[in-house]
Image 1: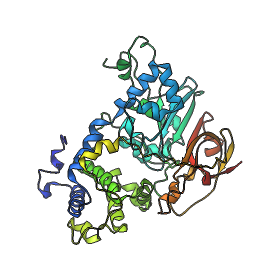
Image 2: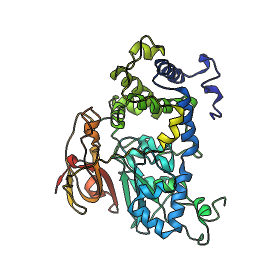
Image 3: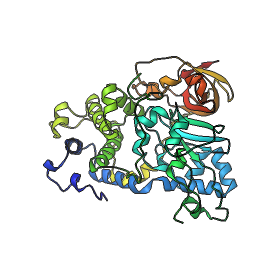
Image 4: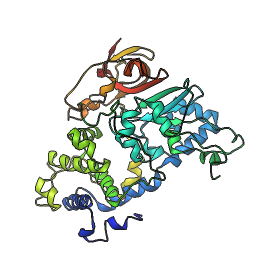
Length: 212
Length: 220
């Protein structure tokens, strides 16, 4: 499960091989376990859940369904929490979902300037850049410049709407369906949907870019 | 509070620098720290709002110099102390030096992880009140600078915006973070034009929407 990081492995190495912070985390886990507050197998299960059960492929399935099924898109607009849960994605940091659709006139982008709010059930845990000061500071002030940094250059007349996740509402951007995939089924469409396209810092792949 | 966490509009942090093919965690200690925090939160029974505020109470210098999971580690110790779940000596040594304290929440067991994580805890609460504002209303965000937790960021205070959506009657973090109970209030998505936030030099085709509670707003 843990894979890699043999220099920093939790179970197999002498304390002298661990970084100071790794030692402090290990001490904390030992203390909390000894006190009976936490159960190490539950920690293993948590790690496994967030490394294997949630991630952007969940959101990609939601977007691909929305691209393929007008009734599902209507449901997603009306009650994104329920529409997303119908595909099996629900949970913490996703109890109040809102889907925001990109159009030719408006591009949506999501940030959490105050912390790291992110829709876990559909995108998994956020990448480091999403939680870090450069993105959190500039996304609201210079969204067009931020997008350009991600390689997304939009016409100046395209409105950019930034969603600052200041409450427990979590946003999923529904990007525009790329041209050239008209006869693709949902599973194949999902391969075009990148994580960044659902945060709004990217665009979906176009047919030919995806491995499908 | 106007802490080091309230980053919207600050300058000088440099490029965003996304990492290609980024792993979920970058080191084993990050994996363990993430899981310790989740499991300790279940046992301690404190709300997410309090956990966020613990991070915010770091000095701005410390907040900005720590990595994400370093912040979690610093806050974990602070919260254990504040809830009487461990002593400073115990946290420093990693050894229990006395009996455990009673926990307000419940110990998370492995079998409960997947079902628990897949069950969202809604922040909305039942009410017989009606929202003060309607979709399309012009509102002004209050110019407030509370010493405690608030979800109204500095950059968006004292600005005129438009109610886009009524999110619901929701737990109010500004109270809940401080042990004052859930104190639910109506929450709204309020959009504010770029020029209203940043002045006449702002890109005219940009706007920001924030999810704000009624005490953050007044009629405009």
